[in-house]
Amino acid sequence: MEPRNQKKAENPLTIDQKIKRRNFISFGVFFAVGGSAITGWRWLLDAPEESPGVTGSARAPLRRALNKTEIFFRNFFSNNHLVKTYPKERAAKNVRVNSLIGIQDDQSFDIQTWRLEVRISPKETLKIGIEEIKSLPKTEIIYDFKCVEGWDQIQHWAGVKLSDFLSHYKLDSLSERNYMGLETPNGEYYVGLERDSVLHPQTILAYEMNGQPISNDHGAPLRLIIPVKYGIKNLKRIGVMAFSDSRPRDYWAEQGYDYYSGL
Amino acid sequence: MMRWTHWINFPVITIMIWSGLFIYWANDAYGISILGFTLIKFFPQWFYSYFHIPHRLAEGMAFHFLFMWFFFINGLLYVAYTIFSGAWRELIPKKDTFKEAWLVLLHDLHIRKTVPLYKKYNAAQRIAYSAIILMGVGSILSGLAIYKPVQFYWLCWLCGGYHFARIIHFALTIGYVLFFVVHILQVTIAGWNNFRSVVSGFEVVETATGGENTVIKNNLENGTEKSKEG
Image (cartoon, rainbow over all chains, first blue to last red; front, side, top):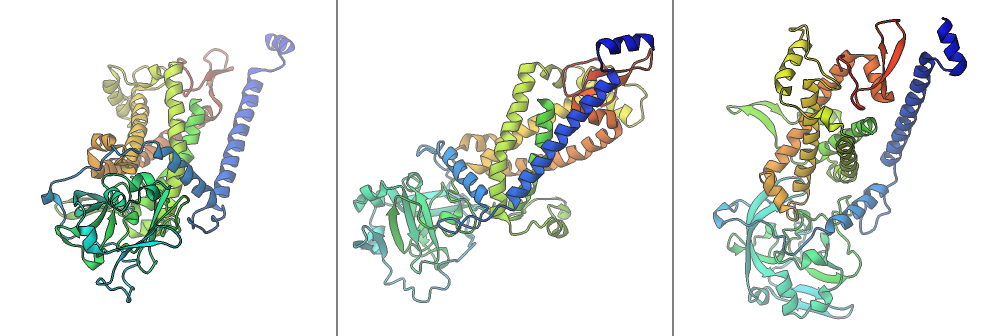
């Protein structure tokens, strides 16, 4: 006991005391940090929904994170990054129909009178018939269509390249704006697309599937095929095309999905 | 640093698995079957119901794409620290590690009485803790391959295509769960002193001479001589 007391005089802490003290501090920090982590998680879980607008239904902080993440990953986007294409034989014969939102309940729709309406200005609208679109140079693509749900399917589409379409109708200056909005004729399904993806060389306005005119369920007479996006952005039966500098409304972004949804 | 990243990783990976289930549910294509007979379906309905998984895809993606950042940064910190501190020397498998790991396994199963001498991690730990890091890297790469298969087409190709990348991503997640089960079991067996050391950074060892306690740095810090199970 003698040496120990001597030691105590120099250094007031014994090893056992040191152990106790370090344990106390360590576990104190551990539980404090753990506690605040749980508090932080509760805050996020109970965070209020974003106010409904162009996007909606997501927790406000998560929406901010999605938008920030979009900005980061858009740095990697390039028109030189092409979607992998396949030989025709690989294309599915039974092309999956996943959703008919915007086209199934449209009683007033008549394919004979259909025109693509391009909003050039608040007053001016360009109306284009399907035969006119079919007379433009045709682009074919056989690629792996990817759904946000996680399934994918190799599909064969053909139509006019969107960038060709825009320059043919002298819409270049409009397409320089940040976003393009597309809507079905009844306005029940709608998507917003940023300029880069609109002008991607594999983005097409499609009127053929597997070499045949597109069927109603796949979006006759004209639909969007945009391989750099999930299926939710590939709007069927385009009615209206418009351009804007801010985000146009987007059906699935209103339901809590990422606005960008790029691949 | 190693203790911090270890403890941060636990809740982050839990959230990643939880939100990942929301995403997987929307196309739950995987299972294990032999000759057409389904052994396991990922996942049975009771599992989904119990954890409230169905119809939460958008929510799952929002959580997943936020916490992926924490998973990535935390992993990066761990790997960077391990490299720069030299701690990797205690961690990566050596020439004899695989042979020794077998002996460790026999010992843990109470078939063999002794274990080859080791410093910080035994041979089995070296393999397990190195593998889990590689799995983390695999999750990030396969995740990116599924997330941006067009922009990161080369990653997607490296992962054997979109389908295979998704399978890798899923299988690694199952791997984490299995790792977790074994890990918890081992920690429970190793006891309180070991657990405390992972929190506080030191371990209490009874010295042979006087029964006085001494303190050594724990097994998540740099190399100290010991031959205790961890």
